[in-house]
Amino acid sequence: MPLSSHKNKLWCIDTLAYPFYQRVMGKGRLLIWLYAVLLGGMGLPASANVDRLDEGVAMINNLVSSVQDIAKQQSTSTEIHDQTNRIIDQFFDYESVASFTIGPYWRKASPEQKQDYLKTFREVLIVQVANNFDYFRTLEYQHVNAANKGQDWIIIDGIIHDTTNTYPDAVISWRIRNIAGEPLTIFDLSVENVSMLITQKDENMAIIRQNKGNLDALIDLLRERSKDLRMARNDSGS
Amino acid sequence: MAMFQTIRNMACFALLASLSACANAPDDLAVNTNDPYEDFNRNMFAFNMKVDDIVVEPAAKGYRNLPQVNQDMMTNFADWTTLPSTSLNSALQGDAENAALGVLSFLVNGLTLGMADLTDDSDDPVQTNFEDTMRGYEVPQGRYIVLPFIGPGSTRSHSAWLVDSVTNPLRFASTPAASTITAVSPPVRVVSYRGNHYDLINDVKYGSLDPYARTRSIYLQYGANIGDSDDQSKDDPFDAFIQSQE
Image (cartoon, rainbow over the protein chains, first blue to last red):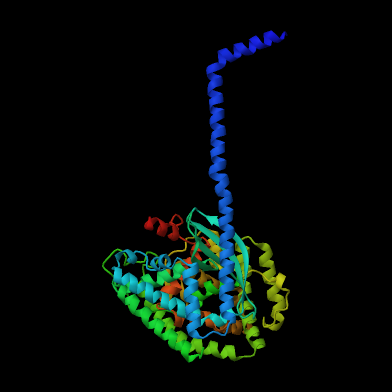
């Protein structure tokens, strides 16, 4: 077949099929554009997500070594108290964590109650952690896995090993809040799939319910608890 | 895995329950939907706490003062007495290998009445019970309920406990030795368990503002994580929290 004939035929096809061709090419361009958008929209964030996961893993490793450093030092209880306070501020979104632990009662609370609760809950948390630093000395943490959970969370799994073999190995999961453009913060810790924060929330809400919705009753109990824990620490001579 | 067992058993045996009768708050936040019998449960929990104070905790303290070898013997014996149930339920679950391992382990360790673990660790059967069998057949968990002496559980777990007690093949052996083992094993199991998890249980018992609520939370979270939640469509509480902030 002569070349011109081909040309004619192609021209004919082109001419006859032009509207169709235009649509297909148009769609092709659209597809390429969509692909580019997907690459831009997914590819880059995918790499950003990997970075965030790495950042989360590094943060947990950093937290664990901070705790171990404190545990290894022969610090006074005031020093441990201050260092624990700093750890909470550095790694946790404390206000969100605290508000989670009283569920819907947070919204109902007055500004004064919120401040009281934030203060007393932090106090109990610090004394509880400080009282357990002896236990932290013998623990080893091993990272296992990091993954996104939805768009708001990163879950980092690890294993806690007690070097004295008093306690069996435990699987733990850190739940980290992942807000784009903001630093990562730890939100929860689960031990063998039992969430510490949900357990705390269930307990706090039960107490508030028992007291007919009165948040002050919980705050008073927390104050008592903080006092008892401090006394227990002083009695143990730490 | 051991911690899983710990949590489940802690919820089953250990804590023993309740404080005062629960006052009903007048708002919609008053009712815990997982625990419709909370008043009754709290009273049972209080009763069980008393039993723990008077009998179980002192016995567990004594157990912890025994030499390690004696503690191991008691724990091994307690585990050994559950092997017939493990075999029976493994068979019901269609796990012939675990059923056979259970029988083998029971016979071999039976030479020392189960007090020495003569089998290789890799040959130890995975402990299972009638609740696992019911879960396998998708029987719903039912309501959270605390029973005197038995402790926290669900209607399914308590029913399963009853079935396991009645169908334990050791009960059908008519020798005096078998009768003695059947009579002795429950208290040994409770004391060795309480002793082996002494700090953990005391942490919940003495370290909680509301030990009842803490025990219930751990029990129900454990159940939800092994697929027991009756409401699988329930929102992730953490996602719900984020949404409530937006």
